[in-house]
Length: 188
Image (cartoon, rainbow, N blue to C red):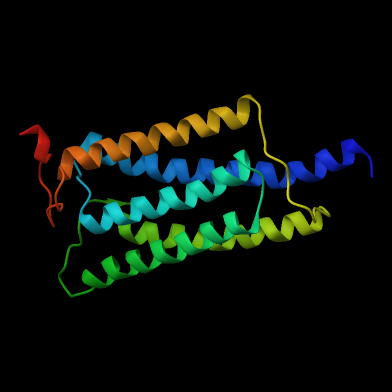
């Protein structure tokens, strides 16, 4: 097998991991946009879901920066499972008749419902990555990816993580977050 063939095979996993990280960045960006534009402060369960998406993104990021490893995919799967469980908990809290739910809706569904869908979607996405890598004949782990595209994806994700962490500290301070936050604790 030539070096060109190997790099083409490895590019399947790298591109799919970059797309996965961009997808997670989109989830975080939408949640952060609603927080800033509409004053929708995340509740404690919402913050846990964001942390779960950050952990999922870290798995994709490790695959891009360090090279693909089964442990990185396991991190994505476990973080997706935990995020899904947290989301199911929040969905179950708002199943009572007449309960309007927490926060606004996007396309008719609340963000915690979208988080559940996205968490299940990430599990399916990793399965698809494995199938596509297998179809491409990619048996070995891909090498770390470098270049402007991976650097840009990394920068977008890192910026969103930093912004979410900063806003969480501003919202909650050093203590426990309010169950139904209405203002930033540290910006009073």
